[in-house]
Amino acid sequence: MTADSSFHKAEKFKSSARYKDALLLFKRAKRAYEKDNIVEGRLRCLMSIGDIYRMTGKFELAEKNYSEAVKISSKIKDKTTAADAAVGLGLSARGLGRWKEALKI
Image 1 (tube, helix red, strand yellow):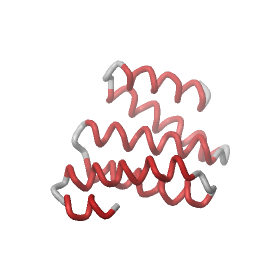
Image 2 (cartoon, helix red, strand yellow):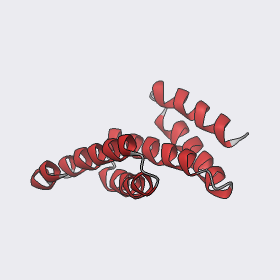
Image 3 (cartoon, helix red, strand yellow):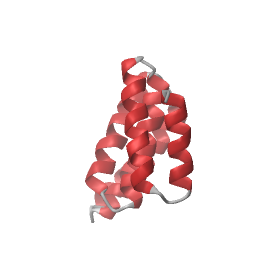
């Protein structure tokens, strides 16, 4: 299975709330994108992994993925994804009870 096919299948699982299956495939796709040095694919995986962790209450893990996504998207000047990742960071901080920090993000 290619990175793209893993990613697209993971998206379908995510849409069906099959988060465990989706997470497995997003991580597989991320590793493949990293191996092939496809930054945009890796970035999409980080965002999706962060989303799943946030939606399932694993806010610390969500923060880790969103933080990495902010760094990468800023590096490649993808302002839209950087903004989306910052929103994810804010929502994760709020989920951890750090609402004052969340307001500053």
